[in-house]
Amino acid sequence: MKKYIIDGNNLIGKIRSLSILQSKDKQASREKLAFLIDRYFTNKKAEVSLHFDGFVNNKINTPRINLIYSNELSADERIKKQIESVLNRRNLIVISSDNNLKEFAKVCGCKCIQSEEFGKELLKGENIDDEESRIKAMDDVNMFKKLFES
Image (cartoon, rainbow, N blue to C red; front, side, top):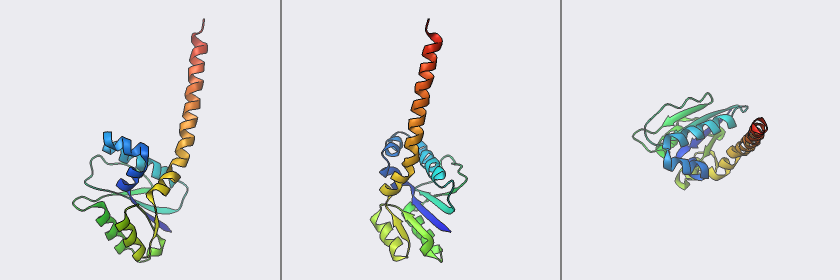
């Protein structure tokens, strides 16, 4: 089974909408990212670890993702420790655009995916949902117009 290790703060910085949200509400950007990743892995057989810097603020509940907060370490250091603890690293996929972390992962035999690339994959389904909600909202507006026309 493939195991994904995701550098959460790095990924948030590469997804424009999450980056903007993070500047206003750090917790909300983390929750949105966790939701997107959880949805992305819905029908996939994989273990997923999502790493964030710092301490737990409000617990985020996701059924398919193991959220890991770095506490006193950096998320990069916590990710490196997780990589080192795995025996079969060929099944590890590290998602980050941090050059130092990617080099470490490659030396350890892991596959690496750029955060930008993975971010585009995450948002593929998001655009469909946005379009569907816009269409539904337009239908609702038309329905209200019909109801209140005299």
